[in-house]
Length: 200
Image 1 (cartoon, helix red, strand yellow):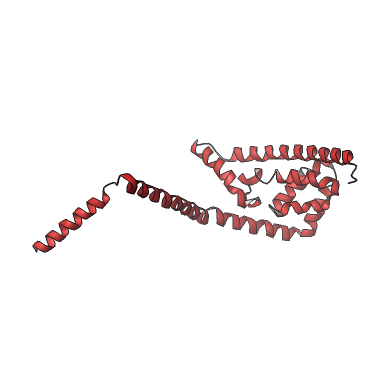
Image 2: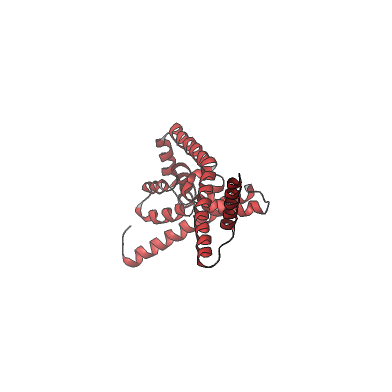
């Protein structure tokens, strides 16, 4: 009985000794190891949050929009793209929106095939500037970079402000910026082509 008691006391003393904080080099190594594993634990927690939250949402949204595209018909979607490429206003507003909404990033840039060569740089600039603004309402358009919207949304949520108005303003600002960039890039392209004597 005394042996068991002595063994229990030694084990208890050993546990208390290992629980005491280490100083010096060993203490620094212990803290570094805890930080290092904590970094991966935080990544794992984020991953679990994605698996139970955003990933199922994205799968459902992608399935819905691909189904919608198939129901409408790819030919009709492409026909709408050809019509939208007709003038400078729809070329840098409607066409990029259709491209980003239906084809998502990075396939959206393939809608440039409906344009003359001289308009392709401006279309690309216009479309590439619109792959982030719709993320608040339509996360399927650019799921690989959803972290941009999620970071902003987290800050807004911590201020107890609603996300809906911000998402709508983000899209409206994106539409304005997209149009401006398209027109400016078109004018720059024309200027450089004339300057270098290139026929587009």
